[in-house]
Length: 433
Image (cartoon, rainbow, N blue to C red; front, side, top):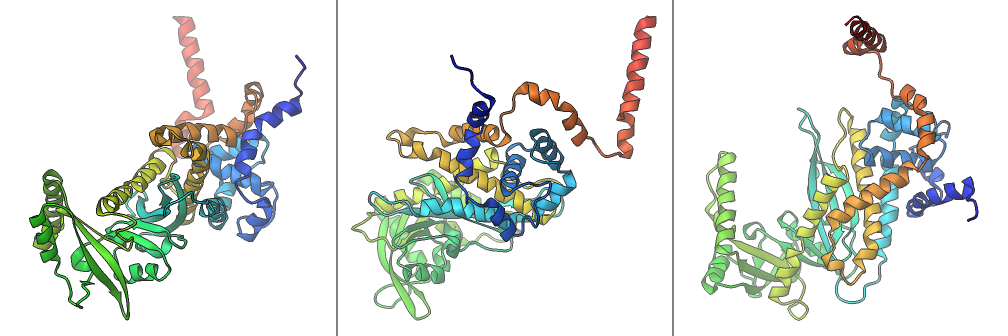
């Protein structure tokens, strides 16, 4: 067998990183300077090294000092904890541009047939500690491909809005009650975007063709009397503009209805308020508004489409449990935001790794949870590099120096000199014994 040169071995080891690298713009140096992440490249040698350090920070669940030690051992540069903190705090726009570049691929996917579904939702990410601060992550999800197609990060004062979703003509947007506002729904229709939204009827005024406002209680009673899902043609109005839509009301199974109404009562008790009789009544029904016509989707099909909305909740759960979508401890707001965005950048890469299984015939049986676990391990190896273990051991002194703790009062009891004196005392005691 022919001998393999060190160059060939290094090329093979770095192939995984090159695959990740091709997902992003070619000139990362220019992008880093344009977004203000870097002014001059000194110890931080390139935009590619910056990307690698950010991913390592998220994937490895390491502190900044440990990231700097890894970088020094790998030969990427000598970067202290303070230097990394200063640099990472300026990387929000840089990371967001990387995410936008990678997500643009999914917006160009050609559909074989049917209407493309898009789910929008938001999740809260709380900062640990007494401050009570939190961030809201707004995401748009393609349930067919199982990938995120849009992302926005705000503080908790910014509410949910359909305007945050990147949508194309004839897309079908699926959303929960938080997005059921007449003004935004009408605006979507004028952009030739279909929508399927769960609504709380008392808060969304609806009219029939005779210009009569519909009574939500009468609609629910009609559904209850029928004992099955019913449909009504309605108009949704916003100022002088109106849109024709379908209102579908379906009763929940008795057990689910009782559970939902119990939650309404529990919430009212927790807030110290009286139970709203109308809210308690409505909790036993699913009320959907949609502009998808009955020829395209029957009542059963619309209800099934809405059940798909749960996929984005599972996506958020995977991100929080497996992709480190949580704030860093002892960090300011700028660093917290970057940390969350880097976690979503990892999610974007995982989506790309899942693409072949999404197109496979057996894709319906795949476990995205387990696949994500496997891909995270692969990404850790690819980002960190694959130096031989013997070479890593030879550079242990570099790691020990870079990870040395600062002198603190509470560390004096565990200082090197104290530990040496303790070992000497133990050795003398054992010899005397």
